[in-house]
Length: 250
Ligand code: FPP
Image 1 (tube, rainbow, N blue to C red):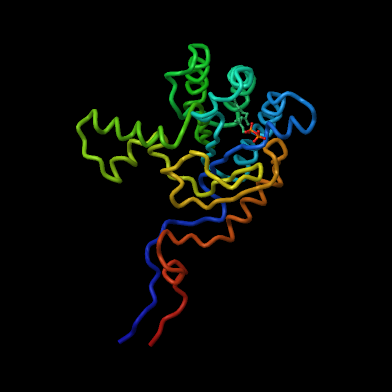
Image 2 (tube, rainbow, N blue to C red; image 1 turned 60 degrees about the vertical axis):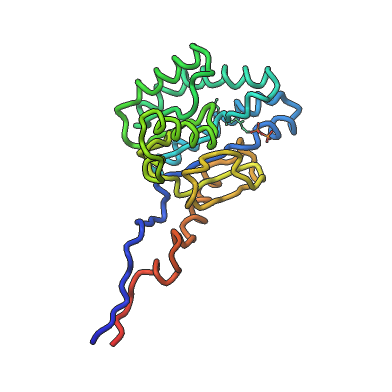
């Protein structure tokens, strides 16, 4: 009888992450070190984000999800909160035409109910203008929190009278039906998730960079992708199970 090592079915793993998620941390410190107001750091952060979106498209990444404003960011000084709202409006009016022509589809993820009409209209227009694009999906998490996301998914199911299971919750999460992030990057030196994609990051590879977000350039993104390519993703299995079968044993 011939026994054979057989590769078990595992999720397809490529050296380029299909979905990258980023906590863009360090704008404030970037500005403070230069004796600038914190909002100047966020402006520089928009420049870094523009370059990152472009580079993801060039590298063949299909989904980029960024944490632009968390549910907790409302607790920042009022001038910083209003600065971020203003920055979003300005960035959208400047960037959407370029993103549209580059095949990027913009989607906003988060609780819109607390946003002003002006901001909300900006989100709707950006999404509508790029809805037909397919090269790269660009999810901007704005007034987003991982706990909010799990709670809104559960509330949705309860309102429909549907049972709460892992599968039903997964389908009700705000990023559904998009696949979970393969690689989750956090810049700025801190090593925590900070309420970002708590559900979806269950099996994401984590990468922490000491670079402040405004300094996270194409080379830094390539370094994160190269690090990811070295990882062995096991999804709960053993190393042996996920290695490709190479030999037969008599
Ligand atoms: C965290 O850095 C960053 C944010 C809270 C905002 C991120 C926003 C951008 C990169 C700009 C893009 C935004 C829009 C609106 C499109 P931090 O301020 O916590 O930095 P620190 O840890 O150095 O203080």
